Image (cartoon, rainbow, N blue to C red; front, side, top):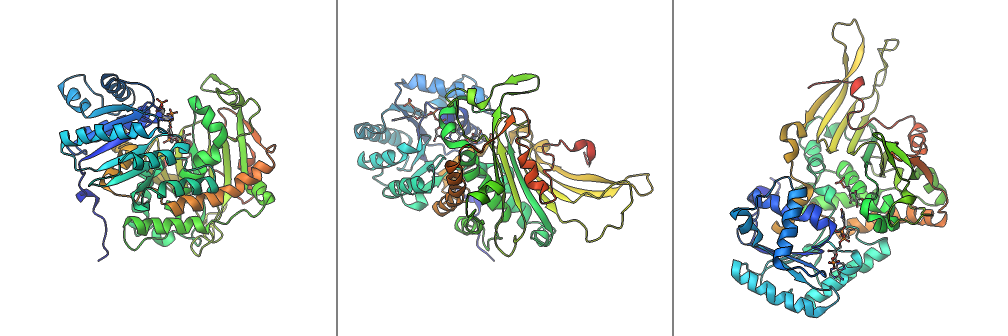
Length: 514
Ligand SMILES: NC(=O)C1=CN([C@@H]2O[C@H](COP(=O)(O)OP(=O)(O)OC[C@H]3O[C@@H](n4cnc5c(N)ncnc54)[C@H](OP(=O)(O)O)[C@@H]3O)[C@@H](O)[C@H]2O)C=CC1
Ligand SMILES: O=C1O[C@H](COP(=O)(O)O)[C@@H](O)[C@H](O)[C@H]1O
C-alpha cells in the first residue's frame, strides 16, 4: 500500500513562535486570532511561547493588550479577561528591534533562551515574517549573525506573500534566504491553500469514483475560477498600487487553485509528491508569446466611482495612497491552457477583482453537452452539467443536473445536488491561517508553496506584466459595484461560453435540494 502522511498522528512540538511584524495589520487581523483559536482547540503544545517583534516600543502588558484586542475583534472565539486569559497571555512577550540592527537579535537570543528555559522548550523556533519582502533577506542574515539559529531543535522560516515582485526579484530573495535556511525549512504561505474547500478539492477529485473518469478534455468543456471581492484597497493602497490584481491574487491564489484542479493524482499523499504534481501544471501553462496574445487573452480593468447596496463608492484613483493617475489593474480576467494530455484544448478562465458585487470564491467545472439532444423543441433548453466548488464565504459543492419538472409532461429544469459544508459547520470552519500555522509547527509542508512553484508562476505572470508595462494605457474601466469590464464577458462569448453566476445568484433558475 502507498505510504501516506497521517496528519492526525503528527504531534505539535513545543516551540517558540517569533512573529516579525507583530504591530502590523496581518498580525492583528489574522495571526493572533489564529494562535488563540489553536489554543482554544487544544492544538498547541502546553509549552509554547510567542515573541512579537517590531520597531515600535511596547511594554509586555501593552503587547498582551494588543493581542487581546485583536482577538476580541477578529477571532472566532472570544476571550474573557479572566484567569484563563491571563495564563494564555503569559506565553506572549514582545521585543522591540529594527530588522537591520544585529544587536537587537543578540538581545532577542538572550530573551528567547530565558523563555525556553521557563517553558522547557527544546530550541524549536519558528520565524514568521509578516513583513515587507525587502526585509526577508536582512532578517535571515541577522537571525544567523545574532546566534538565533544555533543550538538544538528545528529552525523554520515562514514567509508571507508576495514572494518578490517578478521572477528576478523572487530569485534574489530566494538566494538570500537560502544562504541561511534549507528549502525544507522554508514555508511560503499562500493562505488560499489553507482554506478548507481548496484542500477539499483533492479529496473530491481523488476519493470519488464518478469524478476522476470525467476529469479531462473528453468530458469537460471549460473551467472557471472566480475570486471576487467587494472591498477596495482599504489601508493597503501603497502596496497594492505597485502590485495590482495580477500579482496580488493571480500569481499566487488563482494559480494555486488552478493547480489543485488540474494536477494529476499523486501516487502518495506526501508533501513532495503533491507539490511535484502541482509544479507540473504550472510548467504546462501555455505562455503568452507576445503583447498581441496578452491583449487578446487577458483583460485588465480598474474601478471608477460607482455604488453598491445604496452606498456611493470612490474610484480607485481616489483611494488613499493611490497615485491619482494610476494605471494599476484592480481586476483581471484571462483565458489559460494547460498543455498536457488531460487538458489539451480545455480553456481555464480565471477572474478576480476588487469592488465587485459580492465577496465569493468559486470554481465551476462545466461539462460538455450531451452528444445529441433528444429533448429539442421542449420548453427548456438543456443546460450543461456543472460541478461548483464554493470556497468562500460559503463552503460546499453542488452538482447541477437536468431533471424532469415534477408533475409536468416533459419540462426540464436544472436542479442542484448540494453539499453545503458551511451549513453544517457554521462559521466555525477553521480559518486558513490556523490550519497553516498548525501545519508549519508540525513540519507539514504540503500546503505551502515550494520554490519551483513560485518560480514557475512568476515566469507565467511576468510575460503578462511585461506586456502591460510596455503599453500601460490599455486599461478598461468598470464602475465599483459592477461585475468588471464587459471585455471579460466577451472573452468567453468568443468561445461560446459565459461566466456562470456565482454565490447562489442562479438560485431562481435552479431547484435546490435543501
Ligand atoms: N495585511 C494583509 O491582509 C496581508 C498582508 N500580507 C503580507 O504580509 C506582510 C505584512 O503585511 P501587513 O501586516 O499588512 O503590513 P503592515 O505595514 O501593517 O505591518 C508591517 C510590520 O512590519 C514591521 N516593520 C516594518 N519595518 C520594520 C523594521 N525595519 N524592523 C522591524 N519591524 C519592522 C512594522 O512594525 P513597526 O512599524 O512597529 O516597526 C509592522 O509590524 C506583507 O508582506 C504583506 O504583503 C499578505 C497577505 C494579506
Ligand atoms: O492575499 C490577499 O488576499 C485577500 C483576500 O483573501 P480572502 O481570504 O479574504 O479571500 C485580498 O483582499 C488581498 O488583497 C490579498 O493580498
